[in-house]
Length: 353
Image 1: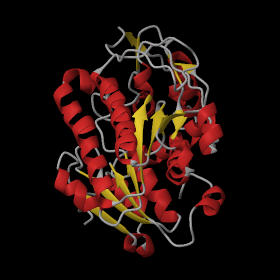
Image 2: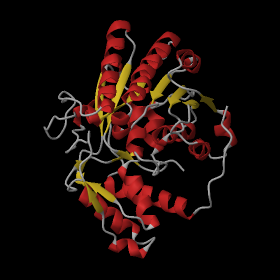
Image 3: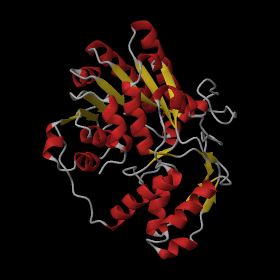
């Protein structure tokens, strides 16, 4: 079951299916993009090295549908391999680039790998896509580029100094994409995501995002950790909004290219408020959750204190309109995680080829 409304996309996608390359296809956002594009009758190539992506995400996205399976091919490989990137881009109309190491703490612990994947790998994809005659690359940037800029809401024309190697890598992506458009006329659009959440977001590991980790902690009867005083704010954005933005960006007028856009809901909540919302929403599954309390620890290095996006630019130039707010987005995500927590252990799937 897809999470977006098809009627908007039916008007902008041509009758004949186009070919899309989704890098990071086995990841959280990538697999949701794969699922949506296949449901829209498109031809999709996935590329992932499965370092953080999961084969089960691809299996769920394809859904056992023979027609979807016929229009989908999975390439297992690494974007640090330029020749592999070239092969993946052959015959492709649009690239949706989401292969990256997406954790701030991870980047602080290992800046070299973050740079190799997020910067060198990104330039490889730009070179391969340009040389293959791809029409456009839409790539994932991040609200992390706003760094220490304290102006609220955050607008695309003002960014601060980066607070982590991850933030620097995403700022470099934006610079390279603009340089390729000005040097070669190669079209690209960057999407600055603000704290995306939703089904298939991995709750495990040391650097898991807050929403899936807290949902899983609460369902397991474990204590959630809030770093700092809990008044840190985030503009949480459901993955359905991100899927919408990618398709709109790929098909937008050329005058919208060579730019970056905030993709969010344009609202922010504190971590304390988020904890209360999750506790309330999950109590139906496990009544004891209603009495849960968080553990508090020191602020983490590299974390942005306040975050709230202006989405006016995306509304105006991409026709972006968030379909899911925080409440209904959490309800959709909650149901997926509850089902996962009650399911039998996942089967091991062979890689798609």
